[in-house]
Length: 219
Ligand SMILES: Cc1cc2nc3c(=O)[nH]c(=O)nc-3n(C[C@H](O)[C@H](O)[C@H](O)COP(=O)(O)O)c2cc1C
Image (cartoon, rainbow, N blue to C red; front, top):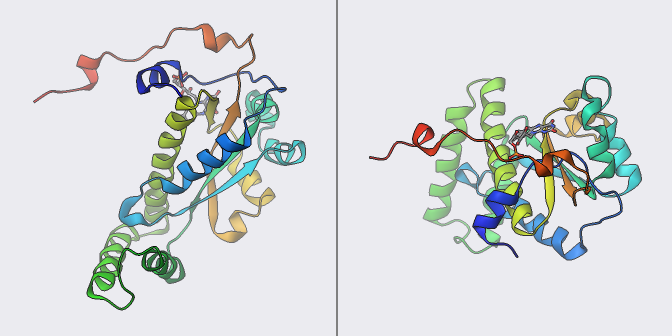
């Protein structure tokens, strides 16, 4: 386990993975819980994740890293695991009912109680605010998925696992290949995970960020 300070300094976008190094099952189980336990607005959880760890699975994901995205293909193929982060295209009653029922089963309130009604109304209110158009609801669900992605990247670093987030892939191809589009999800990003190749040029470069004084205002 690394400290938070180690993790934020050591995490970097891995450009070359060692194909022989695999993430342990116990770390993958923990990372699945990271995906599951991420916060989201009103606990709406508008996401689905596909995890490719076999050669066949990674080859399917790599169908979306061809042509313009060829620069990302080796990252997908040589990583130990690749996670596809997908966002719901829409929030329907069935999803809202499912979330509410699970909160009740998990013991957050009694079924049929006043608190249940408040939770239901509150979530539906926020969904309604953001469901003004197809594009608006996708922007909102996408924000929730990216929040999950950020927490996920930090978590991998705390476990000493190398990673790279990837937006450079063909979402239309991947959505069809994995059946996500047909199930009402858009793939937004990938995260390739594993352990860096010792020759990864990016591991040796210093971090570059704008200065604290430029990005933060203290009041
Ligand atoms: C949403 C997102 C998408 C990214 N897409 C790619 C990508 O397709 N390929 C790649 O090599 N790096 C990608 N990156 C990595 C960024 O270039 C990198 O995070 C940034 O330059 C900061 O460097 P660091 O992560 O090494 O600290 C992406 C990063 C983010 C957050």
